Amino acid sequence: ETEVEVEEAPSDAEVGAEEAADAAAAEEEETLEAKLRALLDAEAVDADAIVELATSAAAGAEEALAAAEKATADKDDMNNQYLRLQADFDNFRKRTARDKEMIATKAKGDIIDGLLPTIDTFEQAKGMVNTESEEAAKVNDSYQSVYKGLLASMEKFGLEVVKTDGVQFDPETMEAIMRQPTDEMEDNAVFQEFRKGFSLDGTLLRPAMVAVAVNEAAPAAGEGAAAEAEIAVEGPTAARPSNYRRPL
Image 1 (cartoon, rainbow, N blue to C red):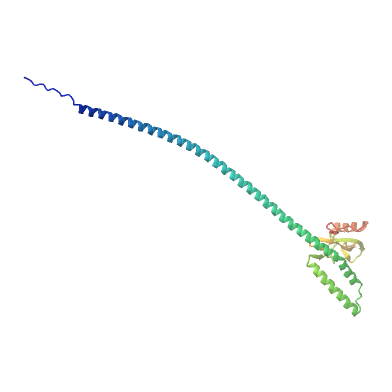
Image 2 (cartoon, rainbow, N blue to C red):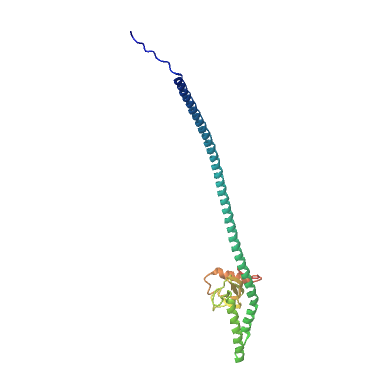
């Protein structure tokens, strides 16, 4: 007789253990799903934050660029203002120096111009003093010493005597008051000086008054100058030089 093995039914304990294992697996699956969902949500939040941060950074960069451009423009404007102020100051300094020099030159010219009659007096006295006697010679020497000292002092301030001895007539520095026929001098040469002329720092204070030699046999090298001299003495009054300074 053959024996038949009969499978025993699981006990209640085994059934309970299996159910517990299934429940634990299901719970773990739900937990993993929840964590995965949470992780995805977190990544989504981070992505939004990154986009927002990038947008904010771009806006900040634009503001920074605009601020930098404004600062550069302000710097250029301030630099231009500084250059204009510097140019204005340089012009003011030059103008002040020029005005100061003009005032000083005019003041010096006024003073020296006022002393010219004194020089004329010395010149007249020199021509009038009779030096034949010893006493008169001493007086003349004293006057001439004072006169030379006065001229030397004025020359230190830029005064120059217009040269007339042995030169041709110069309408720019001389005033012809008469013509003198002669065969001993070249035509248009200065024949005689009646009053000294002076210049101050290159500017004519007054022309020298002279007589001009007329010698048709010995004409001067430049006929134009002789013609100017002739015109100067034939008019109602002697012609003034073009660079004549007086009156101040």
